[in-house]
Length: 301
Image 1 (tube, rainbow, N blue to C red):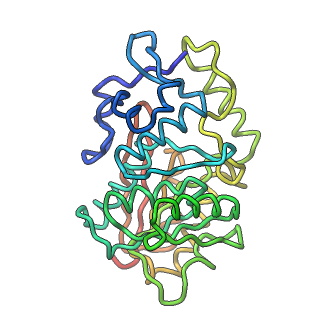
Image 2: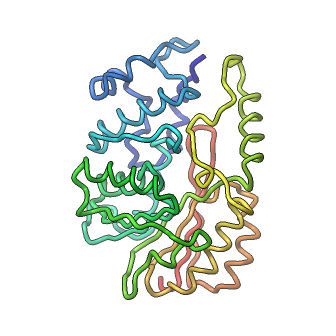
């Protein structure tokens, strides 16, 4: 059974500049991506929707959204890689614009996307909406190759550069060059601490879905191991990032990361106190029934 569209007031939690605050106009989206028609059907409320547990349906929806709102005409993603929900990813970009004080398009702004993935979604949206330049990094060479194909096929090579991280324990080393500066860095860390934890959480999510007895116990957005989990999970990943950021305090104006688990904020604040940034911001975000937040810190602002 298809997942119902959020009520109209639910999407008001998205950023005020979001292109996704209204329910999806499937007629318009199908006009841009005819393949999407195969997956659209009325849900139990009579509202058009898709089955969000069908990876092919989610990929088709993403293609339509990227074509319609961001001018990305060619977005092909290997099936085993993470297929992200576009509205939440766009919100992170919009809140970054607020944070750095540049809400008008500005090609002189340069951002660093840690873990850009095969989808390259943050650079694609940031370049489309704000004309920013990006460096995207990843530890996975296959993901880098996929993202590079997307960049080339959309003629964005002059705006988005990809770099392979050859040492998985580091976030900035090997990526930020000597004397190179960025207005911000951003990151969507692996959420889970192990593959088994990822599977357990997904089973729990499926079991909690009401009236969806046919839902398959699979991660509906896909994902490789390095995209979904790492040793120590989200907390360890961000803690390591905090301490490494001290070595690049004059090269990145604002360091930022998503923090999906609210319970991680308090212990992370303890480590923030140890690295002594000049400024710290916690930016609340929401999409549907899911809440998240951006943790931002700066040694110069």
